[in-house]
Image 1 (cartoon, helix red, strand yellow):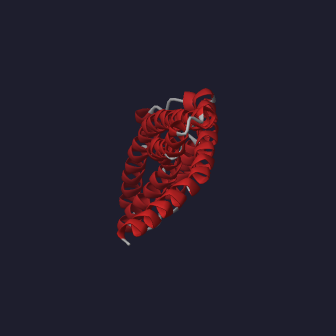
Image 2: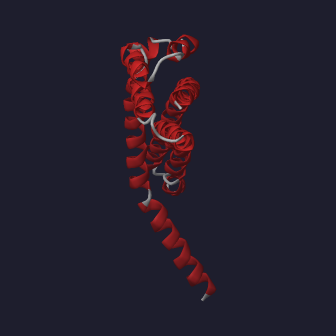
Length: 217
């Protein structure tokens, strides 16, 4: 009874693991395709003017000084800031009539929205970097069982096919994870610099707007 139960459980486990091979391989192929797409996006960011533009934060902060909200909006629009930076600073400037506490709350909300936007971008490659090796290992181990059985029966062709699938899965998972890891690291460095520059400009803008409100009062 114990032996038959063990056999049933073993056969069930083998059936489940064998059924996981095809979905695992499909996901690995999707991860490789995603890594290629994200690599193309990274190269586009690196080669376009968006990445070549170096924002002089002190110079931009200096332009805010002594100007009202309307003049600041003009400076923002004609600057070489990134489109998203212009949108955030413009939104903050347009609500300059809000109380100081509300304006600071709005600034925090806008900055948090930018952080969330870039976290969503890097999460895609972070997911591939973490799951790629795991799925590669799964797709490596699953075919080895039938391969070992084929070896015991002298079926070298089945053994060769199983080993080929296992090695290809390992290489695919590691390659996708490696590319995704590099992309994530580069993008995080870029986006941290972007967010720190934006935060500095937002702080300066809040000070200028608060000073302007104090003068008017």
